[in-house]
Amino acid sequence: MKIGNFSVKIFKIRNRRGYAALCNDCLTEGATESQAYDRMVKAIRRVTKKAKK
Image (cartoon, rainbow, N blue to C red; front, side):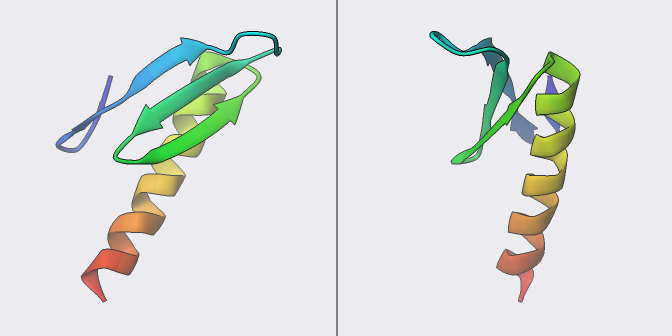
């Protein structure tokens, strides 16, 4: 999966319920793969907005 120019790696978390998404030094967690991805989109948007300032 990709968000803009960044690639997103989604994987199952060991010893926990749910999935994690890793992209551009950001880590998000969610109960499902799509929830982890949606949270990552929001995190990347936040990080890129801060970088532009």
